[in-house]
Image 1 (cartoon, rainbow, N blue to C red):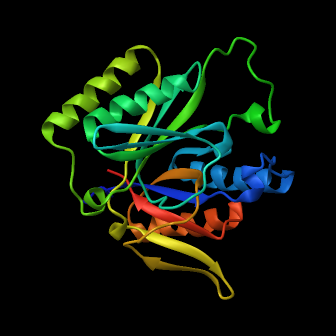
Image 2: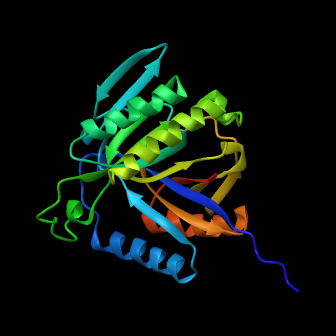
Length: 247
């Protein structure tokens, strides 16, 4: 009798740059490369999700510290952009995901969160926007902290608060997905170099690029997910991508 292969979920992320921050649309060649990759991952039954993000000029950055909240309207410059997790929620305006972020921070404590719209097909000219659309999707991206990088998890009380929040907005159809990343020491960073794509294992001290997009996959191992990461970095034309394990 053979044992069933155990799968783990991974996220592969790339950063944005000034070109995409300007609101540029992808070329037909880029769309073809990314579409080919997604088709290949789908054919293996490994694709779980994939999204791109709109420029930070369309979002906000929220900092929660010592009971105070600071909201900075985009565009914002990258500094410490290592991610710890994210939620995708639906909202009629940017105020809706901002409210979600505030309630999330109320459960988690001091945290920095970026809120940006998800790129829809009509944002880049691939389809017409639905005439009856009243909401759009937003990513609420939680930044890593020393605690999350050390592997500390929310307390039972914090988890209960987050679960209630997600249950509440799920009933209204606002919640799409929530993901939490394991510490970067369990991941890899892939880079384009003169010798081709190379990688090094985590932990990662920092990343200086705002998130541009991601793909989530199911794989039997980090090495298997890494093979998708190597194809991903070529498809999106990024300088580097991070491969992280999801909870």
